[in-house]
Length: 321
Image 1 (cartoon, one colour):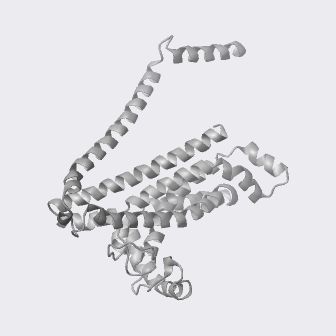
Image 2 (image 1 turned 45 degrees about the vertical axis):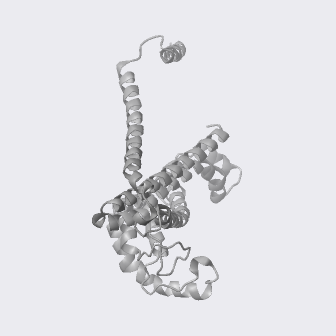
Image 3 (image 1 turned 60 degrees about the vertical axis):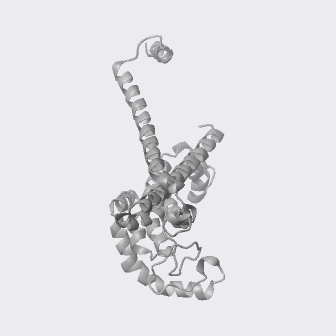
């Protein structure tokens, strides 16, 4: 009876997909709700883009002397965009290796009791307000980094990232990057951990049966299976770092320059921090210029997420998933 029921179920689902017989009400409601939610997201995204473009248009068409700084919109936004990308990239470079290591430890190395508690603590980091992270960076990390900054300037100052002079306050792009890394760490860790734990047990046991050590098993079975999760989690964390406002605003003493120096007191600002600082006191074309910078941030975030989606799709297609 069960052997004949399975083909009938398969046939029924195939006929439903072709529209031969009506679907169940629950299926229709779920399909319609899913489609409506997808369309709503696209409409909201398009609405945000249109709003930013309309409000930024007066600044786009304004003369250079009308823009704050008097050098034009491109010269006004370029240092902010550079600082945004620099801070977010630095945070991702620091956070991703730690996040993958923590996810592997929780999923494959730690005892079950320790793993569950550690996972809960890591997830709890995402609930800490960004203002608290900013205050922690200014009060703890910045003073603690002054001696390290001096050592870096004296010993590896030939690198453009540490050429000095070292900041006497410690409020540098390096500290901002570390704080942003801690902020995005739980996002990347949570995604990587859940996918690592879904690695097919047969793959792990096959590697161990062939004589692989635990690390070799992780390298051959777990990491390839979770590679797309690491990429997608990293891009989500990068998007969080790109849009972070309060922590960067509190930490950095900005000067609006373009520099790769991470330890000096001359730091580029970020788009989000600049909007938070200047918007309350701005009026007229200055507001439009700030919204234009927000449009650039919107475009950067969209490009990053689209690139991540393209990389993941190409890898899944190559692996036949």
